[in-house]
Each structure stands twice: as C-alpha cells, then as structure tokens.
Length: 85
Length: 164
Image (tube, rainbow over all chains, first blue to last red):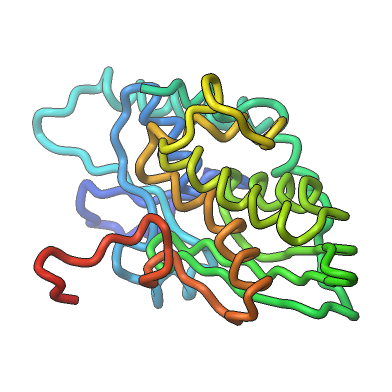
C-alpha cells in the first residue's frame, strides 16, 4: 500500500494506492466490507499524472471516527490484497 | 444487492491477471478507442474483419479489473464470429449489465459472460463492464473513439430538461 501525500501537517484525508489493484476495484470491495471511501480522479487529473497513478483511493477521517473503524479499513484493505493475491 | 465478492470471481480475476488477445493487430481493418473520463478507464481495440466475420481481435489499455476482464472475455467470445452475431452479443451484454435482460429467465447467448451480471446492482461499475463492448460497437461502425459520457452510450442520460 502506497500513501500518496505525506506532508508533515496534512489534513485527516488519506490518499492511497494498493499495488496491482485499480482504485475502483478497491472501492467496490471495501464497500462490501462496510467501509466507505472515495475512489477516482477526485477532479484532479494533473495530480494523478504527477504521481503516475490511474486514480487513487481516498479515506477521510473525522472526529466521530473510532480506532475500531480505522482497524476495519486496514483489515478490509488486507482482504482486497488477498482477493487479488 | 449483489455480492461483489461474487463479481470478483476467479474467472474475472484470472482474465485481469492474464488478459487474452492483449496487444494490437498490425493488419486491423477496424479500430476504436474507448474512454471513461470519469474513472480513467481507457482501451484501444483493433479488429480484423474478413468476409463479415471477426477473424482477429486485440485490445490494450489501462483499466480496472472489471473493465479489463470484460474486454478479455469479450475478445474470446466474439473472435471468429460473424458480425451480426457479435452485434447481438454486444446488445445482450449491455442489456444484462443495465438490468434489462434477466439471464436466469430469458434466452441469451452470453454463456460464461453471465459472470458480469452482478454489475447491474453496482451502478458505479456498470460502465466499467460495458466500455469494451461499447468500444467494439464503435470499431465495427467505424466511429473511431467513444466515451462513456457521449450521447450514444447506453448508460448516458441527457441532463434534465435537455440542458447539457
């Protein structure tokens, strides 16, 4: 898993790519696990070209999210990697 | 609601890993490029039409697993087929993906392509599955390029009141 955007004081918005899996496929499988993220260009095609990715996955965290929900995201990503093995 | 783990079946994952008929045809008679500007799927399709049959077909591009597997399985399904039969498959696949054709109740010629029937319940993924078929239709009709956001896309609906 590659994190895209690693500024020191970045906002609680995390863009990432799962190696070998298109973000749209990641999004559909995460949805199945009850985890809602956004995938695609995010209206920012030039940035996608800059980072040489077809699109990105993007998870946003807010004050109401819990650590359990973060763990759910991580284990769902692990599941995606397993499916695409 | 379809189970997307069912959609990501071994056959689809296999065609994603090892796409069949990958590449371009140097002696293609028909070509088209299909793009989905919203998600970035893009594929180039070349066809060699001879005696009104698809003697050879190849594709390449960059896309998600659903799109790539759909393209790969499409090429194996239409290769060698007469053009009208290919056109019929295009129509049936579109109807299946958009929910107009119930492959469990109605007659069809889709065979193994029914593994994509689950996309009808995943509105964001329907276009991924349809794009290769849309592109084949464009190639056979010498349209050159096609986009999932163009007016002739089966999924495209004009804005309310006809305002673009």
